[in-house]
Image 1 (cartoon, rainbow, N blue to C red):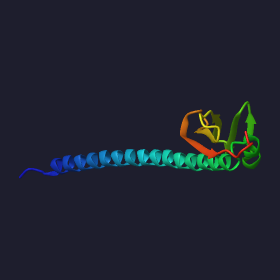
Image 2: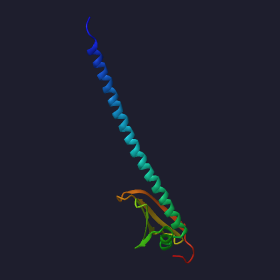
Image 3: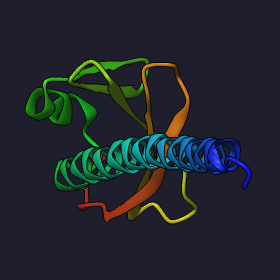
Image 4: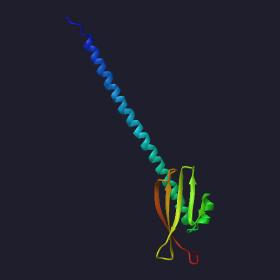
Amino acid sequence: MKNKAPLALIELTIMVLIFAVSAALCLQAFVWSDMTSSEIAERDSAILHGETVAEVVKACCGDFDAAAGILDGENSEGVLRVYFDGELCAQASLTETENPLLGMADIAVTDEAGQEVFALTVCWQEVDGHE
């Protein structure tokens, strides 16, 4: 009768190898999931901040000085810049329209690397005599 110990040792080695590969794949999936979750959270934050800037600009009828005062931002050379937590920056700029009673601004939210995360356009009805 032959000794079956080498066969058991090979089976055990194969099982350990299979578990190690499975653990590596699971770890890679968790890392990918964490990165995706972080990107989605950043985009959600950018959307929230962009919508906030859009609503304030709309409420101020495009008056960037008033909007800068409300949002603790700055208005320089016709561009409103608002910084949020040092990570995101929202920039708004007025856009010309064919209708003098329609105001329009483009708003872009960028991350700290300068990559655009979210953009939107906001419109409002101009009040007579308000430029």
